[in-house]
Length: 351
Image (tube, rainbow, N blue to C red; front, side):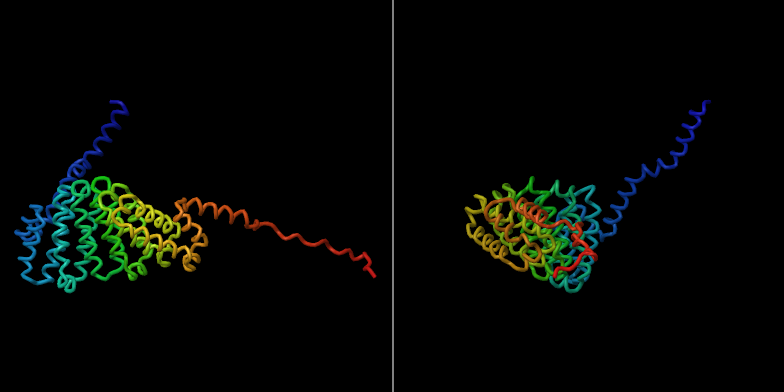
């Protein structure tokens, strides 16, 4: 037997103990998924497996017996099971998530179990941002995302609200191509959630992130055709949000581009036909922002860039020109001042 043959056999033998583990990995995952579902009470387990949101909610209501804490516990367990179903049944996962979110929309449930409410909201966001779920049920994604945003906003947890809004608008951008109307619905809910001074103050960067993505959605012609009134509302709110100095200063360049997209959205034929006042409102907001001392402090080129937005120019090009001019006008920093010639001590002073 050759040396190469011996090495090959040894290598194959070394791999044999690992092969069962590789083969068992999908089986272990399936068992984990089944465990989350099997941990539910029998009636709730049957409802979850049916993938019927209304049935799941009815069972939760029955099992809770009107006890809001019990309802919150059941909702949390239910949405945990829904998360484990994403890989095998994404359609059922989003429907079960809808039932869990609907349960915690109840004010008494939120007040009695705030932590579990936040847990349900956070898990729901992980479900509706899943590409597998978005692919099979974009309309359901929109409904669950909007409902989740409403619950997050009522928790008065500004950081949580901003985080959920950011995930929601990310989902909206992904479903624009397949369901622009649903994308508009999710975007509107996300913008409404961050259109709060408390949220903008607590999470200005995320508020700007949401507004920027929302403006990109609103600028899509397919979305403008599918939901022109919603686009008008989104663009108007976005303009107000990003001109808040707290939000604007987190990234002036992104804020200016967001305003450009907002102006483009309300100026489109589809939107202007149903909401002509939106263009007036956004234009007025941008005009006021152009003369804002607070925004100028964060971005010295603010006025010129926003004037470019209003005149249909590219604000990024204006910003680049401003940067180039500043560089040309700034003297080199490495030049040393020229010293005057030394005085000759032998030279006689003039009389």
